[in-house]
Length: 295
Image (cartoon, rainbow, N blue to C red):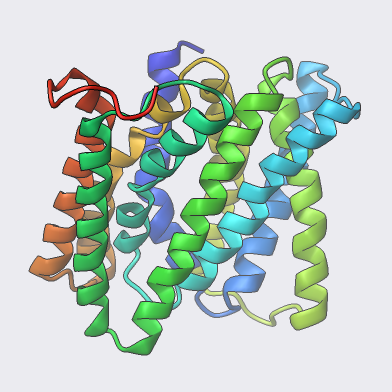
């Protein structure tokens, strides 16, 4: 698949994922929703591997790559599903727009991809300002709203660490194999957590929740993660996460139209500041704001 087509597919998937995450937790609860999604995605990914005749290597570097991948699949996604109980679905994409800022700093430390310039630092400050506005808007949702945003920040951090770690270690792995290795580890962890804290199969799953689980398991996990791994090996980390510049607006609009979510002006202001901060962070090196702060 061509890189532009894969990039567009990821944009569409990431725009629709927040609402599907919200819906998949209806009825049976978020833990059943995320566990069943990941199990379905793991089975389909293994079938895809068999069809492609691709093996999953288990040498030391491969295992390290899978562990970093599972940090995003389990750690970040668990935090996202938990947080989605308390906040509008569009908040997920808005907060994940901070991912390029996180990954930019981490990629500079681990991969030496780019320098920190005054423009980039200014972008970070704008992102923090947008985050502050989002926290203010969450106050109207009560204590649960603030907890939801804090949970999403944990998810963004884990997602960023996962992406940079995979980029650093997994350059020689097939994209689907790298995805499968992370899913296998993450699915085992999800099953363990579900068995300990729930362990009961629901007697009834609402049709919308079931459809969302299948959508996320088939497209979000199997196709989406594979495309993400494919692009991660071919694009700079921060360039890939520019997807998060587009998805906040689309996710907020979808939440309003399809789920009757109320999105106040402060949310749009916060999303705007985060998006502008992201643009400045990514392209601030072109601004003549002074000398490079850190070579």
